Image (tube, rainbow, N blue to C red; front, side, top):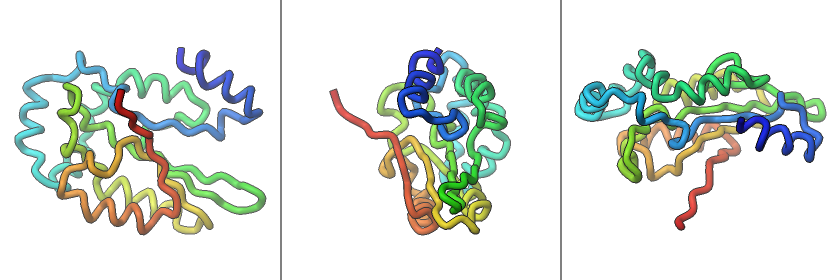
Length: 176
């Protein structure tokens, strides 16, 4: 549906191939009805730092259930062979441009504003993506959430993100 309403008209207007459009999940892609409340309680209790979050991120089964709608959409997308984190290399005027689609929504869990300060990117997402794009002349990271939405233990990871990517695009948040 989003493809027909948003992406295809935008691609036509900009005369852009769908292979040059990159999507990442955000908090509105989380289906709260698919979140197991017992599992979520345990995660909130046990994910006290980035190392613990990295272990949980690698296991991934609970995160994939809450993002099922996004993952289904993403797999139908021309670049959608695997859900983020994912890297791409695009040739632009003879230069390799690296694009890292990172998943900051995997820990989004529910009520509005309750995710603030509880999200994790993890070293694996940031550094594995940066390593994969190391030979590119320009590295671009796509993330959804602003830096202050991440867990305090992510400070080093956010510094790595800023250091290893020349451009960081993130969703713009506005208040209503």
